[in-house]
Image (cartoon, rainbow, N blue to C red):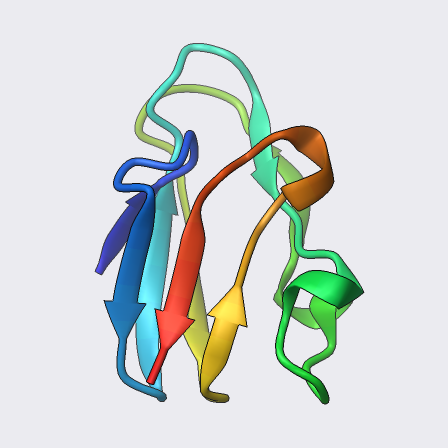
Length: 86
């Protein structure tokens, strides 16, 4: 499943254990960071965050999401995307 860093589509739904690929689709650097209050209880937000910047269009990182729930990267930075894990 591919999820564009600038939240396109605005949400994706995957099954527990699936991997989501984050792709920078803009010309400026961006990263994928989760806040503790934007992940399911018991998930370490730091462990699934990617602080290093994706510096240009097409650069990618991926995460495997094992625990069901809703994940919202960059909630505090205005990013509106959601990953829903069933």
